[in-house]
Image (cartoon, rainbow, N blue to C red; front, side):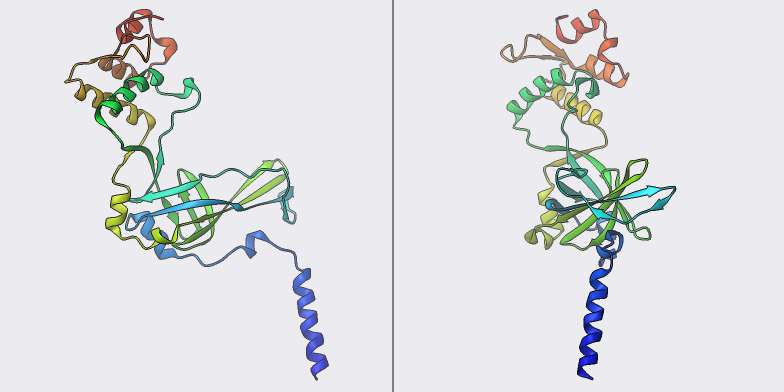
Length: 273
C-alpha cells in the first residue's frame, strides 16, 4: 500500500512539472477590492514604487487570431518602461511636471518664461511641486486600474504590493506581456489622513502643462505688483523683459512660435533676436 501511495505522489509531481507555465493564470492572486476602491474614491492615499528587478516579459505568436504558448523573454530585450512610482492622493495620480524635451512640444516660449520663473523662485522661496493630475479609475469587474491614462491589468494587489501587467501586440503576429511589481514602503502603508495631507501639502495639481505655465505667469505678475513687464536679470539672458499679459494672451490663443510676428517678439521681449 505504501509503495502504491509513493508511486501516485511521484506521478502527481511529474505531471505538475510537465504542465506549461501560463503567466495569464499563474501570476493571479488576491486583489483587495476595498482598498483599491478607497484609492479611487480618495478615501486613502498611497505611494507605490516600481521594482525593476522583478519585471518579467513574455512573448507568444498569434496567427489568425490563434495564440501560441507564452515563453519568457530574457537577455537584451527591454520591457516597456512604466513610471518609477505612483503617487495617489484624493483619487488622483500626481506626476511632477517636467517640460517636454522638444521645444515644439512645449508651451509657447516656455524656456523664456522659465528664466523669469527661476527668478521668481529665488525671490519668493517657492518650493511647491507642480504636478499634472489624472483620475485613478478602478474597474473591479475587469480587474483593471487606470493610472496616468494607462490601463493595467491587476494580477494581485493589496496596500503593500501590486503586480500589474500590460499586453500589447509587438507586431502583427507577436504579443508581448509585461509584468510590473510595485511596492509601498512599510512605514507609509500605515499612514493616516493627517500624515498623507502633510506629505502632499506642498504638491499643487493641474490638469495640463498649459495650466501650470499660466499659473506661473499669474504669480509672477502678482509679485511684480500687477506690472505686466517682468524685467529680466541681464546676467541670465540677452532678452530685456517679458510681457506677461501679452504672452498669456498668445498662449490662450493657441499661437505657435512660427506664427509670432517680429513686432510681437519686440513687444514680448524687447528684442527680435
